[in-house]
Image (cartoon, rainbow, N blue to C red):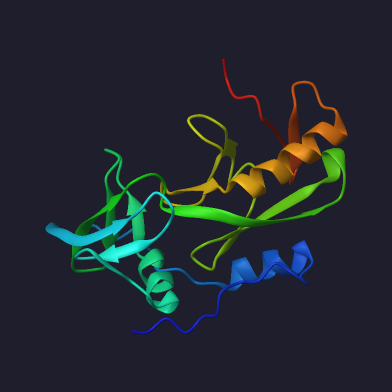
Amino acid sequence: MPETRPPIELRGLSLSELQRMIDERRLPPVDRWNPDHCGHSEMRIARDGTWFHQGALIRRPAMIRLFSTVLRREPDGRHVLVTPVEKLEIEVESTAFRAIEMSSEGHHEGRTIAFKLDSGDAVILGADHPLTVKPSPRISIRHGLEAELSRPVYYELAEIALAEDHHPPGVWSNGAFFALDGPE
């Protein structure tokens, strides 16, 4: 089945409109699919988010979006592509996704922050999608998957933290506070 959903664009959307779009995206229920392990997909997601199959770059963004919808992380840390009838390992060098753009509304405790992912999806930072900074700045996405924040996105987040002067330095989003200095 081809991927027909266009990537989400943050520009021009209010965060309430974005939340509606996120809620309307019906992702496959990979958390309920538990077929037997079938082997390796011969796929790899490089540290920079580039997808490969048998060493060749996957050039079609719609193909990457489709594969990203059936991706999950197992409790043992392995990443797998899952369908109702097969489960194939996929090598992930760092995180499955990258947060490549950020949008913010509000201030201090009333702030909400959203991230656009390199997969074409988006996520709103909050208790259901927390931010951690160690080993690198990343946000929890779904099914054990994470998105590493690109350097410009992290700097944008740090600018907010510095401007709002929280102690410890951090940001509020969707009613939750996220320290940017990480746990000691």
